[in-house]
Image (cartoon, rainbow, N blue to C red; front, side, top):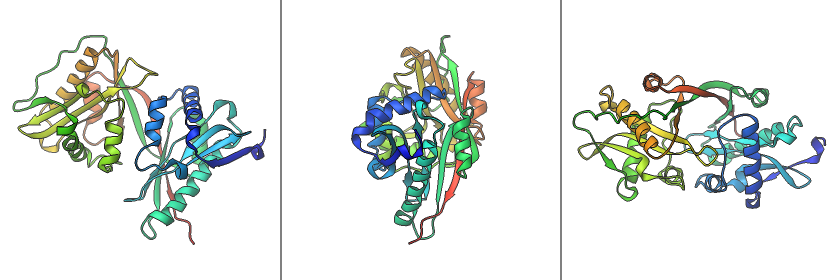
Length: 320
């Protein structure tokens, strides 16, 4: 096979099963973490902002999908991102390069069509730090590392007693109808100063937060009277690692920090996840986090499990 045998075309919904297989084979090959199930890949591609028929590209050989790459965008601020994989049986044939170049071109098209005049797209993509082929591809296309994300874990084999909450704080069970929008606003306030944070539209946030993985009993909502002051939002990691509970978000409003609430929420999350049968807990964190989160997690017994590099490239719009 040579490069001329490869066709790059737009995504079609019938591609979903093949893209799930491509993703999972590639993730396993590179010892990464982002496996898809049939439900999760459909949920991902049905996100309100995505429009995959226009913003996802599929590489085929003899009409059979062997790779894909996305070009996703928040037109409010020019932040772009994307993900993609090539089936391991088709590595080292230039397919990843062609897909990434097509996705970058689509981002440039979108800059001209969807952004304010002269606003560039600040595009990010990621790779595990040991994935030398993807790192080389991104660097060859002008992407540079700007940040490192750590995946951290802790074993839950040993019982963890739930610590007391600070005076004046209570926990209330999460209820979507009552608490959904309030949790959305509280989370945005808690993380507004974190590097790379953007407040998503509520429909996008709820699409992912209230998806098929939601277990309301794993969400901790800390209250000071009738005000949410802290959160810990957990879920199962997924069927590819069913013993892992994932802490998707844990944090405290600024005026309640340095009172032990974040530590209490974290350790209570460990306790609840263990009570639900999980053998380990994990989360991801910016390695340069300015709120002392890394030290908090390390004091709680977590360790760095894997490292992911965040790459950046500025893409100017196409003229014309």
